[in-house]
Length: 350
Image (cartoon, rainbow, N blue to C red; front, side, top):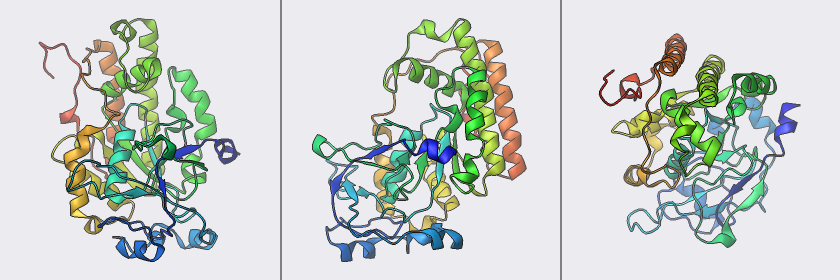
C-alpha cells in the first residue's frame, strides 16, 4: 500500500518540551504558559474538530496526556514579537492536509509564514527535510515522529515531482502517487504555484547544489538542461492540474502574491480554504509575520537571473496556459501572470 510505503518518512520538529493538551487550532495571542489548563483558553479557534468531518471524528483516538508538544519562538530579538510561539498540536487531533507544490516553489518559506501566523507547526513527509524554524539550542532540535501524526496543521508533499529531472522519471513515479489525494489526504489540499520559469532554475539549483547555493552558469545550457526544462514544463502542469481537478477542500495559492502587498490577503485566503477563518487571526501575529517574512534563511540571496532560450520559454508558457484553463474551470483565482519574469534578454520586453 502507498501509505505503508510512506510511513518510514520522518519529520524532526524543533522545540522545548512542554506538557499541554492542544485541542484548538489557534493563534496564541499571549505567551504560552506551561500549564495545561491555561493553554486552550488562549486559542483563537474553538477547537481542532472544526477541520474534521463527522466520520473522521469517530476515528480519532483519545488524547494522550503524556504527549508533549514542543515550543519555539519564531521572532527572537524583536521585543514586540518575540513572545509569540509555535508548537505541535496533540497527536491525532488534526486532519491531514497536503501543502503540495513543485520543488523550488518556495514551500519552506510558506511553511514559516503559516506556522508564524497560526502558532501550529507544519510538517513534511520528506525524510531529512530542514525545519522551517530551527532552535538555537542544538539539544532541543526536536523529535522523530510519524509524518502523519495528526499534530501539524498541514504537511509538505511534493509527491511525484520530488527530484524530477526527466519526464520519463516523473511518469514512472506517478504510478505510485496517483491516488494520494484521496487515500492520504481525503481530497484536502493547498496547491502552491510559482512561475515555472523561475521554478526551473530553482529546481536545477536544488538538484545540483542544494537549497542554499547556486549552480554554475553552464548548468543552465546543453542537452541535460534541455531535458530538465522539458520535464519541468510537463510535470509542473500535470501535477497542478491533477490537484486542481481532484481537490474537494482547499484551493490554489500563488508564490508571487506573498512577495508584495497582497501577502496578507493570500494568507487569509489559504486559511479560509482550510476553514481557519480570517476573522480569527491575531492582527499582532500578522503584523509580526509581514515585517519578518523576508528574513527566511531558506531564500537564496543575490540570485543570478538567467535568460531562457525561446524554445524553452514557449514550452513553459504552454504549461502556464494549460494550468490557467484548469483554474478557470474550477472558477478559482488565476495565475498572476502579470507578475511573472519571462526571462527575456535584458533588452527585450514581454
